[in-house]
Length: 507
Image (cartoon, rainbow, N blue to C red; front, side):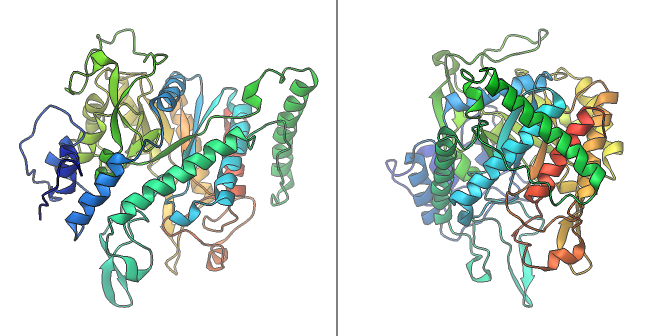
């Protein structure tokens, strides 16, 4: 049902998003055009969309979002793009991690701080191992929505709508009807989380002059514990030496770090409402391969480049396209091809090698170095048979050398216990990362980063690791995820230690 909306209440593009009735069966409802606008995705077939009963309420929510200020700025986004260029060139390493799906209840100081501290410690270990700077991106401040394999599920013998994330519906079975007011709630929880991240970093939460908790009592095997202690001692001695000789007195980087935010760009009505035409910072100078052509106006978008303005998604610094929504002619690719943010693209076992380059042509026609991060998620048992062909496809194209290869060792390794509890084996996670490193080295490319689902809390959701967690431990009160299992703080730090060892040839 289409809703008539006053122009002052909702922009023309917003009205298109609010009234969109794009089909999910692959049938396109409008004439395909080449000109990109923030709402041109509404003319494309869409996957994983949300069907709301009250379109008037959708219009009201989107009108509110269009009036809200940006959560992130082009200056911050362009700083991240500069760092990701270095990752693509092999000069830095990318660490991305956080919850599978945030809940609004996670917008709480203790939970936010624990993830900041965990990502900081992991990055220090990876700096030690890789011998290069680490770019930190959190799956925070917006990672609410989750794609689902089925729109419904069974509960007490009844079919109910699946939980799609706090920005869509509630986990309680009585709150499963999609509620557009949750889109507005998602904005304010994201803004509050981002604000607290900035305030915490500015207040010294990441000050490396302060002692860090490197407690390793959970490590049961003495030889492994000794390796970890060697790394910790090396890091702490380096920091102490810099302080002693005064090398840290002018090094503000020891007092704070940069931490960028990210989420999957799943709900396009929400993403469009926070997409703004803004001035690009003067310092930003994109990098291109020497063989690339000139780069005036990309994506057939309006001629705003001459005004030094671009469309930025201001809901997060970095957004990615999921494995379920990366259809070449689908709505998500259409939306993502027009924004200036760095973009991630999930690549799983169902991705034919022949589709990668056409997707890159759409998402990065100007060959900007570091614009696209290819997030591979195959599973430990399949990576060796799938990753090489995907690498070869990119190497044979004009995009060779422009992308970041990032390993997501989580999603391809999800399994269920006999009692039906979803979990992941730590050994499978580690195996996939190790295989990725070996394959990239053998093929003349480099692993640019890891993408992890983790939490700073003491949960028991993944089995294995030096804690010796087994499937029996999942039945206790430590399993808290409402979606997929996450590494706890000890498992995540242990993975960083092992990856660091792999970089130093100690695997």
